[in-house]
Amino acid sequence: MTGRVLDGIRILDLTRVLAGPFATALLADLGADVIKVERPRTGDDYRYGPSPEGQTSLSFQNTNRGKRSITLDLRRSEGRDLLLRLVESADAVIENFRSGWLAAQGLGADAIQRANPRCLVASLSGFGATGPRAGQASYDIVAQASGGLLAMTGFADGPPVRGGGALADFIGGLYLALGVVAALHDRDATGRARVLDLSNQDAVFAITDSAASIMTGIGVAMQRVGNQHPFAAPYDAFEARDDWVVVATASNKLFRILCNAIGQPDLAADERFRTHRARARNREEINAIVGDWVRRRTCDEVLRALGPEGADLPCARISRPDQLIDDPQLIARDMIERHPHPTLGEVVFHGNPLRFGDAEPRRRPLAPDLGEHNAEVYAELGLGEAELRRLSEAGVI
Image (cartoon, rainbow, N blue to C red; front, side, top):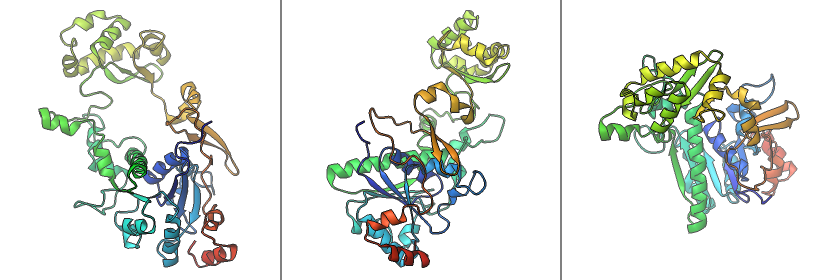
């Protein structure tokens, strides 16, 4: 093993709930020392979610793995002073409060970088720090709606549909983690610590499949097409006798192979289906033909005929995340993590897709208890037991 790619990086994590904690969990996975700063007594709201009764939320466990936790009330002057002392040894402060809240506490980027000019500051909020919607509240569904994704998702004859899970929050978290790593690289090259202002609306808009470019370029608006693709067919979810599968053909070659595999080679020369544009215009017809073939078979039969053992086309069974816990491919890629927990017995995590050759796993496999590392982290500031007791009794930590 050759260490971790972010060894030596210390991050003060002021984020809570999902988007920000997901980003900092990724950084912890890569070796950063992530110190999660939480409110005294209650901590991050995400601690209270799906879990066995009386236990910390399993969602919190997944998105705060590998971190250290301290408690600190940033609304108190002593709390703000302690944070700025912690900033002195930090490489980054990451937060996802509503835009402007941290600055209102006297802890804006200028104050942080006065305390440590090499400390970058990364902020994620619903609409960013500029523009007419700056400072407005947002949740995942708001970001999906305002970023254009919700309008693209769903079937043509139905309402808009939110992307599964908290998709917008995870998109924002990915951009946040990327931004932090880019800013760290820039700082090491130039000596300048950047300030990142990330809007979740921006992040979602950025991944809407070139829809704005296509509309302004050729006047074609992106419509809801369910599981289909607007410019390729057949590319859809099909119901087999026992479950659902997806089949995707995004080239003429793949379409010809599919036609042979389902015993209808003449379809490849049919003018309705011979080209990309023709198939897109007539997607309902070609999907009905393929759907009828799939419907008469089980998923296993479809995948044997169309998958690697047969035509070697892009296809897969539609699986729920819980069904993937025993998936041989994910297990082989170390994407299913199982960790013993002192009260939960065992916690199953989604692994980190970023796999660097010979890199060591993160230092701490589990999420921390609230304030678990108070004594450890504050000792680095020279605070002894008596002072920690006083600060705790005063509600500062």
